[in-house]
Length: 236
Image 1 (cartoon, rainbow, N blue to C red):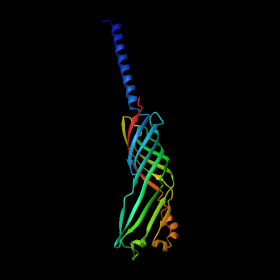
Image 2 (tube, rainbow, N blue to C red):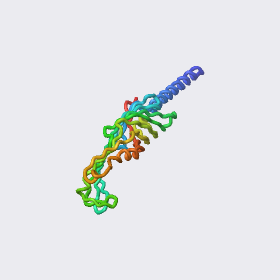
Image 3 (cartoon, rainbow, N blue to C red):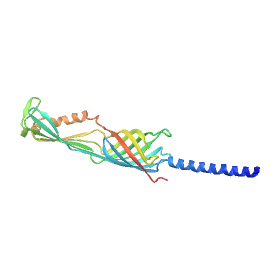
Image 4 (tube, rainbow, N blue to C red):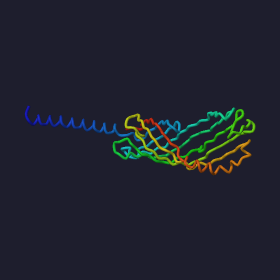
């Protein structure tokens, strides 16, 4: 085989191999790109939730999210008070709709910081208190009938601020992804409302409500720990 033919065949072989490698590199690059959209299921301290995420940059270092979470509890606590008991029934509902933005400050690293704003349709915690048998307050014994009924509530703002940090992607590179996030909602200072019948009507407890509110002023934040499982959508 003469030299021109050998050189031509070698050129064809090298060109074909280069084209294959380039095509494989493009496929790998596309395959390693985060999904443009994702849906996620979250579970954590604010209950169960769902969120939708969209990459705002091709490398997904900035991601926009909207989601909603829900948690409810209404179990009864029984507190011993002398010979009797106080039955405390809380009505706790944490329902939050949140819009936020995630930013990965380091390229190729899944660490992120996030911030946003939300809305809660139940910004309060209420509790109903009734007596069972004779109870004692400060050494004074009071009958079940005279204790009456107490309804207390704490109410925060409906509009919330949110900030947090974590590790993981909201738009995964592969089909499934996982993330963990720690943050806090800003609720504002709570307002106290107290409705009651019975012996409390003979006291000056209403005059103490401003003092109670002042003492509760530091309860302005709701911590949040979330675990997120994501599924990439509309991949190339």
